[in-house]
Amino acid sequence: LYSAGQLIYKLYRYVYEDMQMEKIVDQKPANDKNPFDDLSNAESDPEPSGEEKPEELPYSIIKGNDSYLDDSGILEEYEDLRALNSDLAGWMSFPGFDPKPINYPIMYSGDNSFYLNRDFNKNDSYAGSLFFDGNNTPYHEDPLNIDRNYIIYGHAMRNKSMFGHLTDYWGNEASQKNTMIYIDLMNTRLEYEVISTFLCEPDFNYRQTKFLNDDQFLDYLKAMTALSSYDFGAKLSAKDKIITLSTCYKSTRRTAVIAKLVRQIIYTSDNSNSGSIDKEPVVLPTGLPLEVPSPTPVITKPESSSETSSEVSSELSSEVSSEV
Image (cartoon, rainbow, N blue to C red):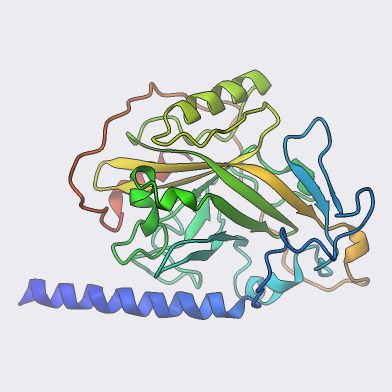
């Protein structure tokens, strides 16, 4: 009876937490158009499309004017949500997954354990939240200086919420047709394309955020794409910028999905309102290490079982806590 009661309670929590997250998602203004595909409102200088690709960069820069920054320097559509929780650092959309689309806020506290089992409102939650690694810097006053590698953690829930769809992404050719990932930071929009996905051991160094030089970063990119279970045909450059999505696979291993930046929308002060208001500052990191350890890679082949991952708890906790 006790076990049955616990199971019923957990199922109730799943439904309740889904409803709470839907309320947060509904507060984000609906945007039926992909800003990267709708360039008709972009500035015409220097190209008619408003898009340029400087020779030294492997991704395009778009001067956007279809939206604007508010008085505190963040995209206006997130103003109300940040008023509810200033830890809001971004928003992620990974289209193509049903019935639970990957469309969630990304939190940042600088503490890799804080949002592991807390929702947007900082309440206890089995599903937790998507959140940036504490060694990342989600907000840059100059958005051209975004991090080389943003690490985003999330639970792999059995009902496919959060990162639940990613547990079989590495081995599902059909799902790998979904390769475009959209990340909004508070003052810029980013479009990424998947270049690698694989399973690995928790201590494998796929979550490195700081690099000593371009050569080390390029070697890292080559190592990550060489491990991919699917050849995405990625062209790599030392000037690339990437994101790494990390979640648990079963009880002991990790699923990684790595994508590189292909387009970025920049909003300048010309797009923002005049005047000023009192507002909490955008969250900045608590500290950044000078060196990042590089443990010896240990890769294992996936088991043949079709069992999906359980909702991660202590496993993901040990994963992310080792990074701070």
